[in-house]
Image 1 (cartoon, rainbow, N blue to C red):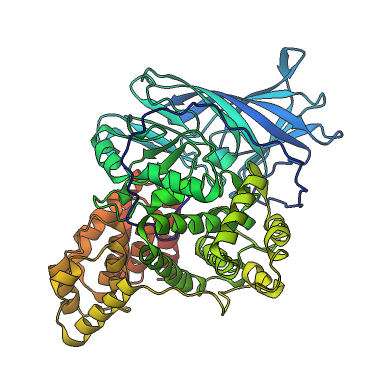
Image 2: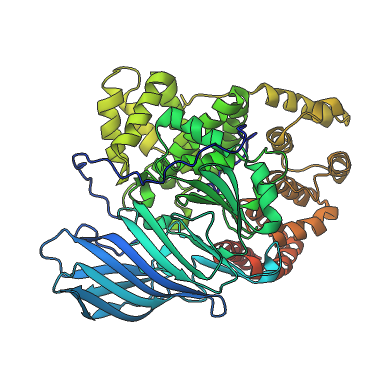
Length: 637
């Protein structure tokens, strides 16, 4: 998932369309000796996978747009690990449980169960008594209309304005709000699903979606590779498909599908590039679902079907490194998975590093250097405001950590920075071979930081002693801040941008249009970020008249420009600010604007009024984030 770090690049360049559809034979996890497990308690789950684990999930559910619920049955095939265990413990949040049954000798019979009181973070623990240690257990349930992992949009909130839309966001711990599960990445399972819905919407899942499937309200899915619960995904709406290549394409609303396919037309080259670096793509297809702008994140790496924000579709491909990021998760995250949120950098740090390698391979060192520089500048600002305990890559046991806040810029960008340091020390050829072996060795497994370090010691550090010290590794992984010896990046493009900005601030003379006409998004971002805390109203107006930042369709520019206008007292931007935060629900893009508005009584009132209009179209995750900022500001004033 890409939510906090900057997401953009000039995207890949392969023409769409291969001549032959690859066979859709599932790639199973290779057989290998069991990896020694390191004890890792997932404090965000009630599950007890060391006693019994879900091996397979079979869903038979109905999507009810009128009631705004998903309901039906979840049938679990169980792997009993502890011979003394006689309970199955599942995670739920706001689910209504109708009954629980166990299968024995081909017959189903009721099982006793208890649903605990709701914890505000974890939801409700569902304890099922299984004295017979049933091989299969079935739960009949219904989700709540307020499920934290689902968003229900009226037709008016969609691009086409004709049909309603529903989509899930299960990461971090929201899958439990629409399916009772062992909602921890320590458990991986295969799944099948039979889904019914109103017949005029197309239903998709993080599974084997058929590009040629009929829209008839009755759908079946299969995910043959084992996944963790946070990669469970479902969506339904007025969706059509357009291919990019034999194994990749775009699902979107009819009004959006052509624009999205054009913007993402180079995805196949990204896949091929990553395969050359790190081994075969193991998930058969890589399709993308373009969601409404209320989607709270940049993207979500649901296997076989990445969920993508439309805010990266700006017509010039400057923001589509988001696709590189979500694709990279097919190796780092989906294939090799963190075992709990404390080890989030194993997903996002590795993915951000792989993303940058894809960008460099396709567009060159200068492009990747600009992206690294922007991400690291943002990291330095964020890390200065964080408690020391959460500045480490691997969060120490006992540190209180909200699951939704676990993946900060530390996980993404400090993690990628650490891996780039290793690449420099050991050399790219050696480090690439190491990473490829790492992905193969831990394929379809969930691991801890300590397992990674043990593997790296054997296959990298000990093979090339004295290139990096144990003290350096420990500092990167477990200490706060950024190590003093962290490698730095330079960008010629940013040097030119800095020169132009400094000259304007000194003389009031804007740079020559021949220079700025060639700038790409990254340079405009750097130009605005270097302006300092605020400008005079006259300076802001001069920039706005020349470059038309106010009203921009580029969210990366908007999220930086609008806070600058607020700090500078440029009220002429307010109508467009309101339009932007009412239309867009992506947290990364709108939270900096809300956070700046609430610093003054007038701005707080404006933010409250705008949020009241925007709230019906926000995802519950975004709503919670905005409400927290408004409440804190209101209490302070």
